[in-house]
Image 1 (cartoon, rainbow, N blue to C red):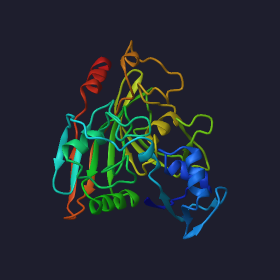
Image 2: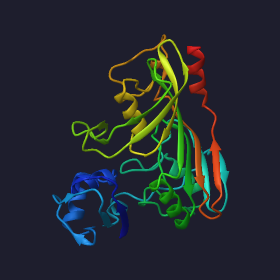
Image 3: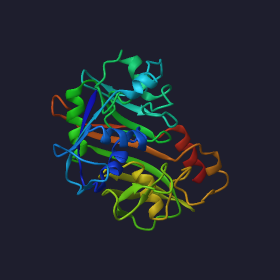
Image 4: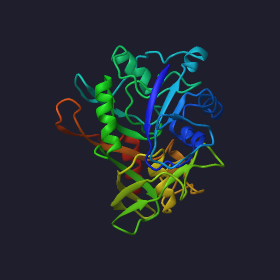
Length: 309
C-alpha cells in the first residue's frame, strides 16, 4: 500500500475528476474503485466520488500496488545519460527529445526511469508512485532539456516543495508558428483536460490556474523564437498556452490547429515539438545553495533555425 498526499491549489470540481488529473497513470475505473473502497480522504474524511471540492483541500490517497501484481516494476536498463550535475542528493539530466520520462501501464521499458535505475543501482527516491522513482517533475516525450532527479526522499520532498511554492525556475526555448508582435508578455489561462480528447489539455475557465511568461528572442519570416518561463507547471502548459495565443509550437503533433508548414519542409521533417528546457534554477535540498544549470540547444533545433536564417 502506498500513500500520497496532495494539497490542492484551485483544482475544484468532483473528487473523481480531480483525482483523474492528479493520478494520470490510473484509469477512471481504478479511480472510482479507490474512492469506493474508502482509500481517499478529504481533509481527513472519506468522501464519495461526486463530492465537490472547493480547491483548497488536502487529499490523502492510499493505493494498493495493483499494477505491480498485473505487470511488474520498472526494470533497470543500460542507457546513455547526459548528466549535467550529480552529488549525493540529486542528479540533473539533459533529456533528449523522444525519451519518455517514466513508465506507465503497458509501457514499462525504454524510459528515463529505467536508465536511472540502472545507473544508480535503484538508489532513487520513492517518487509519487512506483512508476516514478526519483522523478520530481516531468517534461514531455518530445521536449528536450533539463530535469532534476532526487536520490532519496528527503531531497525529493525539498524539491517538490520548491515546485509547489514556485521557487524552482524552469526556462524554455521554443520555435513557434507566426511572428509574435509583442516583445514580451504573459499568458494567464487556466487549463483542464479536454473532455473530448483525454490526450489533450485545453483552456477552460474552470481549469487549473496556469501562467507562462515569454520574451521574443528572434523573428523569422513566418516563425518566432521565444524564451519562456513557467510560473506554474501544468501538463502540456507551454504547448496549450502557445496554441491559445495563435502561435503553436513548430512540430507539435497535437497542438497545432492544422498548421503544417513554414518555409519549405521544415515541419514535415520534425518528429516532435521544438521545445527545449534550457535552464533550471533550484535550491540545493541539503546545503540550501542556489544552483543554476543550462543545456545547449539540441542539433535538430539548431538545424531548424539554420533553415530559417
